[in-house]
Image 1 (cartoon, rainbow, N blue to C red):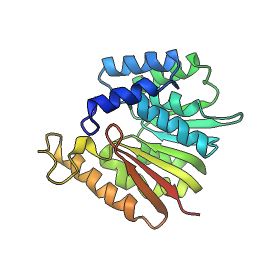
Image 2: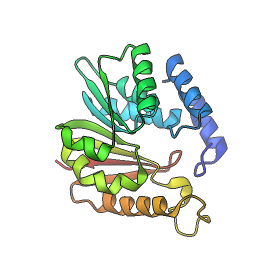
Image 3: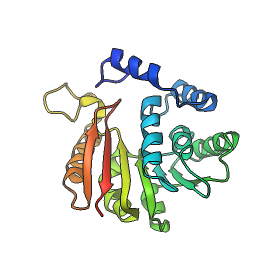
Image 4: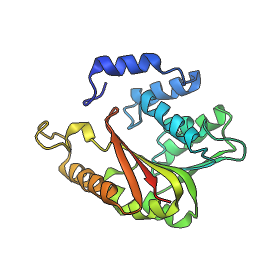
Length: 215
């Protein structure tokens, strides 16, 4: 369970989440068993709802892992849609491709392997939704490029922006690495003050920022 939302509330939300299919649940169990930095089902449901709400046909994801969040996102794509997802670890990318293929999404989910900061220079966009869940210390460095790749009215969704509550002054003694904590604090300041974004932060799981690009 999370560090921000009380366990009882998270269990209640989980009991109401009927959007996951057996394959998504299996991939989620695999990711958790391996200790991978994946989202949970409630954030997955939020991603599915947001992608559906904006009628997303072109989605970009930073941080594929084994494809768990990508399965939630790709499930919202209509005919002709595409998910482009970036992963630094080649073995995780291979497993993600297998999981997308098992879900019948092999033709609509493309996995790029490498450092997202470099790969973004090769991408043209525009995207309807971008999910940022990669290296937290690189969040700010990638921000302006991601905003440029987003269509007006599109969404930039960022995970882990509350970092277990450690970014909140005085809430708890930080135990995670300090450079990452400071990077997230800087990022939160940037997205909430960015002239091209309108942002709200939802205290779900580890904190999710939802930013819409101004028209």
